[in-house]
Image (cartoon, rainbow, N blue to C red):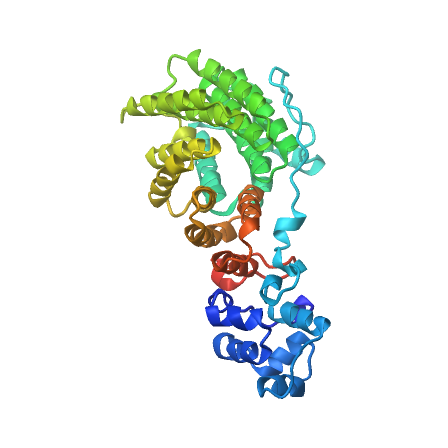
Length: 452
């Protein structure tokens, strides 16, 4: 049945109801149609339209005067009412897998050149932007200009957490080009260094938005640009931060050796700067734990986790932490510790840690909450807690639907694939039904209840 002709999905509570399961098992369509009418509000005329049957035929079935035995009719009913194939003894239907989990493919891994000299990008917006920047050549930025630019960056990061970076990227790249234009003129050292730092942060943010979209080549190019800009002012902690971002990206590309090399380089940069704070060192140690865990090195992972917690305990309220590391608070430390254990397959240790961190996480960080909830669901599934895992995953769909992030979709896809052996279990049926409602096929609007 075409999507345009479908008026309603059956609620998960009906698909998992023992009476509905039994009616489908014996193909008692009279009972099925009555349940659909009573529990889903889909009346016989609507059933007929959705299943390509005549209203009189549906009426005869409900009255017990006709049986439906032909396979093509049973398949039309399954597709029209969205009854999972296994419930009616059919093969899995094509619509049971949400389109978003099929069409979005992972980008092919790219080579990571740890020691390659980064170069400034040349493929950024063209003549129109350059012409505008030429008009602003006489601009004389002041300390207040720098403060305004840094404030906008903080706002970009906040919006990135809440909604994803896809729609932010044009504005961020435009501002990066603007600041780079200002750098062409000679200015007082304090202003010039401030502009370099701002440009480096804008380049890192741009790289992050590409990374979040799993467009890894573009992400690496902008991360490399951020490294070069930070190097101009010898900002080693920020260089460490960028290298740590690249390390995290390498774990997503299934390149654990590169991840470890990059985070080791990040820690070298941090050690070369005496002013590197304990919070920065704790964050870097946790990234190292991720790299070791991806390699499957249990001993080194546990040592890096211990180092992260040891550094975190040394944090003082008066530490001059850079703004870019403020996100690494206690809930983030706890949830990342759980994820590191989860990467090692230590689900019994990981589950309570991730649950604790998630419970204390900022509600506005939609992407983080989605990531961590799917991680929690995965650990619960590994521990055999199928009902609880599916319930957690259903709750994760709310923040997942609110943010545009291919990384979130990737985590959802991984959990969905891990559910494969349990497709016929009621909890998994309920999760899939909710998933289809939240991730409709391309061209359909997301239900308003899930878009807020």
